[in-house]
Length: 201
Figure 1 (spheres, one colour):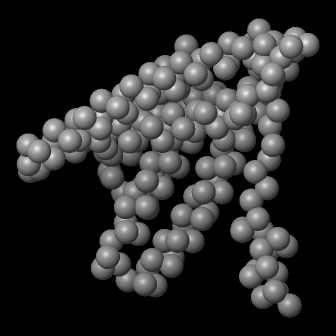
Figure 2 (spheres, helix red, strand yellow):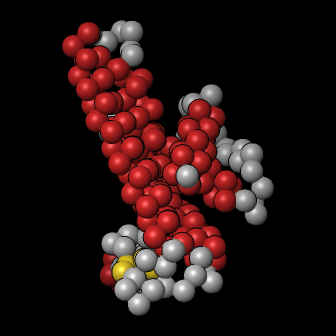
């Protein structure tokens, strides 16, 4: 199933990142660019780095100037994340381009890649919640609460994985069809964000 395959790539990316646990560590994608594995690994690496960006920026003692620089990096990371989702959807569009949708076919509320995006984030939640549930310097109460949360996340992984695989099966059989909308983010666009285009005058 595609969800299990994708999740294994996400786990690999997370493990590789935590060998260094440094947001400035360059990605070393082990897959060639013509493989879907390359996109999945790259996608999760972006998510993993951004996860740690979000941790760092919440430091109450962070220098305001450093926080502003980091906010710019988070914005750029968000754009890159969106781009990767669209690349993954392009893979599925190509894969299923010859499938004839049935007259009764319906559209899904989200594309396959956006569901896979949620699975990537979920892999990070599971990794870090497991860390907390097994943290030796934490209280037993803390570990127990985190284990309860981890159990819910694992159940969510099962449900989300099933939903992704069902969606892909439905598309493959013509019971659902893909329709992808570009995100058209406005806040990064010099011509669409009023703060940016007014400063250009």
